[in-house]
Length: 271
Image 1 (spheres, rainbow, N blue to C red):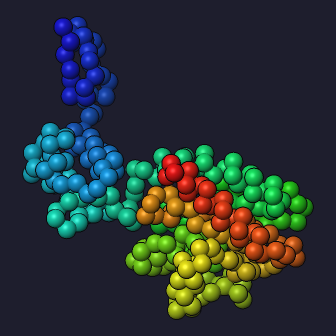
Image 2: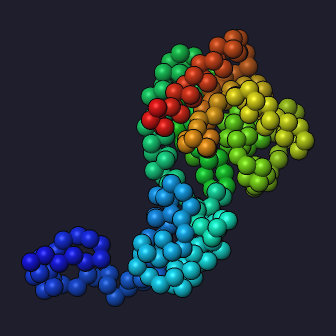
Image 3: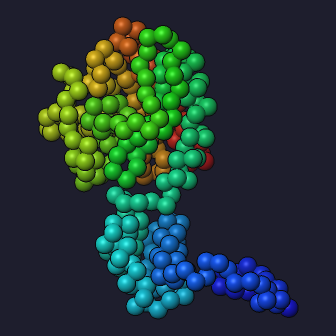
């Protein structure tokens, strides 16, 4: 005879004689339910109602409501019109690590191709909760070169990948990212005026790429193109960086960079 516990995994009737799980005495049901709710909401293609959540985890609506309120208060979930819940756009996302692994698997071979074509540094940046971070780098083989470091935090206002990503966020998210990092002048070319910066973000959205002309480092130029990690979000960007003295054919760099970023986006979406 087979019995099926709540998790749905079949166990034999004799399993009742097995030793008790060593974690059983420390198990907190409410924490487990909260994790289950986050997983459910993250996997749902659209915002989900409290009734559906309660049905899924097998708890009363009152218990589920308390958990939902707590997750909303902590910024992990947001309640939308119609009393439905979705992952917060500015909060923790259970999909982040999975999305990042997939992004790197798709992008890194194409980054190496781009690096071989131009012999310059190619970088991949990704948007996390409240910052933009370098997640992959293909170094230039040249002795004099621009460089990036995996794990480095990217300025949202003074780098090509930062501008590409921030430009495609909501106005509230743009303000949050820029305010969190701060508008610092790295060089005399850095845009530090809020109005000019808004115009720069508008220009990036319109033209489909961004340029850093000695804005983050003297004598350095960087071109960036957004990567659409989903149909509605450009949460990553690709860049090619080089010393100003080697900059010649900008149009060729921009064309190749945009083509590579577009190919990464298409492969991520399965098109």
